[in-house]
Amino acid sequence: MDIAYYQLDAFCDRPFAGNPAAVCPLAAWPEDKVLQAMALEHNLSETAFLVGGGGLYHLRWFTPAIEIDLCGHATLAAAWVVFNRLEPGCTRVTFETRSGPLTVAAEDGLLAMDFPARPPEPCLEIPPDLAAGLGAAPVEAWLSRDYLAVYPSAEDVVRLNPDQDILSRLDCLGIIATAPGTDGVDFVSRFFAPRAGIAEDPVTGSSHCTLVPYWARRLGKAELASRQVSARGGDLFCRDLGGRVRLAGRVVLYLEGRVHLPGGPD
Image (tube, rainbow, N blue to C red; front, side, top):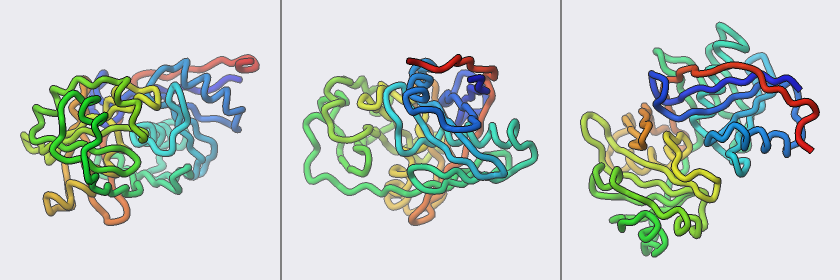
């Protein structure tokens, strides 16, 4: 197999920031073990694989360890590849995924994704492993697909030094830490997913399916600016749509080439 390979930084406007994703367009699906082996070889938080054309593609996402049900930054990166390499001039694409159809459109210099909302439910008690794993007790804990740990300030979130072994005991895919933002940003966050083989994800679109409904309700506003305060950092422009969320950002191409797999792994 000879496969096109793109590596892009998502939710940023310059290289070496945002969240790097690999994107591999395919003519047909190989065995899942080949996709997983490629994702492990790429060793990025996600590799996106897509099959299709004419503005409609099937899209799957793999971390180095597992296939996941939803990924924002790799979807944004895949849309950039469609608009700029596979179908130049196309400005809207639909991806069929494990989370249903996801559309991405080029709007006002941004790529805007339409994603399902995942509003969290409050936890009656803060799980001990959540506080111990994050290294500081949050003031609130919520749960959707991921745990949502709420802190008083952005500085509290930046200072977190998680224990990945303890966090991996929690029965969830990932852990979101969040707080009110500063400097024109409505809220900040970080995201940890040791069960998915990701110690810390630099910028996470799927976590905003939970963050946007939470902060929209708390702040009483539908338009929200978000910053993920990881070491690389990234910015999202969000809108609460009720049962859906709009997540927009920029993408920068870093690398393109070819993957050579004569027969794939054994």
